[in-house]
Length: 200
Length: 200
Image (tube, rainbow over all chains, first blue to last red; front, top):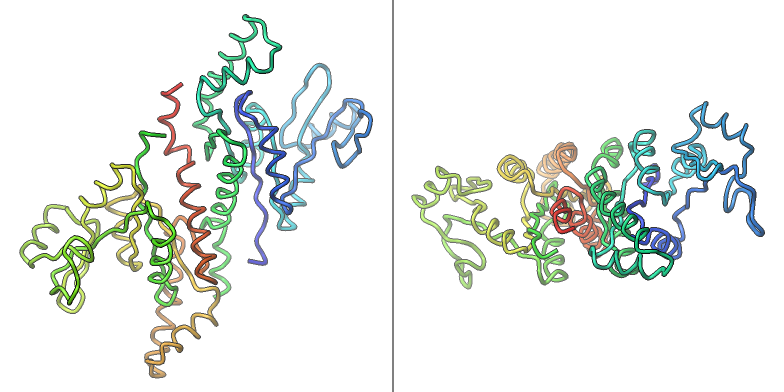
């Protein structure tokens, strides 16, 4: 399968699902997977390297990237801009590497518009009760903010139908195994292998 | 996921792909997978049991099954009838078991009409050269019959586009692992998990 192009896997889901933990565990298990690197206008923190943790950009540079369609998605958070550069992702895919992009639901829906060939994974907690426990477990929530967060997470769950796969994050290693199976299966999809017919 | 229904996996592909070998290996690896049992009008051979190897039927019984839509597919081979009883498959699926059906391309295309919810896997040899070696390896082919078989297999390969997945059978164990990944992935597909939304 030498001519095969890589696949963009978008790992998303409601807050409290454990996206960050699963993403980190996956990267440890899949040495050939490339992690998408975000562009941002915020200042580098100590130890952060350009091209490793982020692509650091000025606001003007970021604005130009938005206007020229160089971002698969972007958002403004507390006055700083964050986004996913299309070029980095497309270069890795062209080299035959898969790319993993961890992102919130709003970002994932933008990526679905700009890169519909991606595979969209929706990570969910195993139950409402477990989500409740995870939010409370952070120990930083007042009663009001808990209700808000819990309600928001339940609303976000309804976005599941926009995704390709749903992965229950009961145990991190089990969730990783499911995602690795999805990666293997997607590489076997007929749509991605029609080039084989030419080789016969 | 208690309310989940099983999935019908249809393992098919050109002759020489190794469907029978892979099917047998898979059944050995997946104790919870149920193998679809065919109905046939041919006489039982020594040791064959009704309901284990085949459902043995008279021609009249078989005709009735065809007419009443009880077969997912059927064919006549050298005067005997063979077919896939719908009831057996649907019962196992309703119990939550996955069902594996190994069948030639013509049969698989019939099943796709009668049971489009199935997942259709196209098993192929790793290369034209390997297919040639496998056909010659049987040692039963004249030069003419080799050319016919090889040409037919190449034509059959073009049917790949009608399937959901293509699995290269380079090494049987590797092909089994790919198929097991596809099984896991299909159980994670959003379309099969929308019932989860009701549980929240």
